[in-house]
Image (cartoon, rainbow, N blue to C red):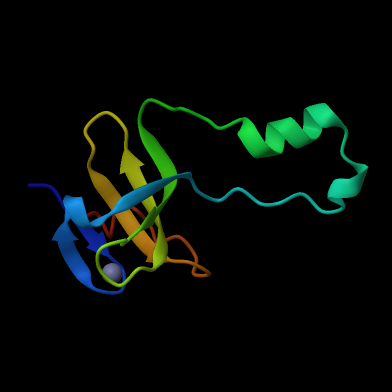
Length: 96
Ligand SMILES: [Zn+2]
């Protein structure tokens, strides 16, 4: 079974986690000035790369906390995980 390294608890079984989609999406300032297309882009449009992808995950059956991850969408390998509010680590050095 795949293990995902929770930055709070350490490696745990994949079945304890929930993927929350793309990470690093910042709410635009002054949303009241956005037109419908700009708002729809913020709410609905996400990248779908083949390769390393920045995602947010939740340790839903563990500590319950959200965290960031760099995951390869082809191999499913997690290159790095880090806590919300922290800077992304160098993913080659901290490969899981
Ligand atoms: Zn955890």
